[in-house]
Length: 144
Image (cartoon, rainbow, N blue to C red):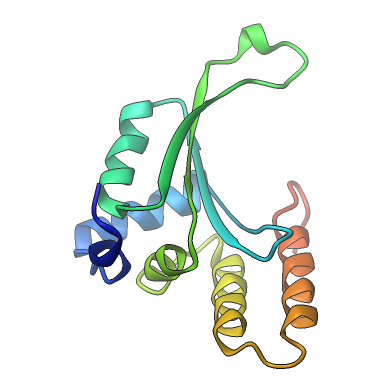
């Protein structure tokens, strides 16, 4: 994986942008944690597929094996989750790609990152409002 300095300013090729757009829109989750840290998570049953994404993305990427939590886990394959942490890494990715399905979540995270840079007097309240809106947008089966 890349060094911190190199990954913060990484410019993706057209192929890499397309790969990341499809991967995040199809298998990804964009979120803002309770401590207001932005996060991208991608879940898949193929470790090698996520490893390739990790090579493209660079630093502050972790891949861990997940455990099925459904009622009958014996009927489900093991899965892996790639998570991207760090304001600069998340911003570097989201500022270069154009999501279709998760466009609203992308915009919300970019707004939150802007607030974290500015640190205006009411930034914490505004961040919490963005985080709550993100929770609504990330609910399954809810028509938005």
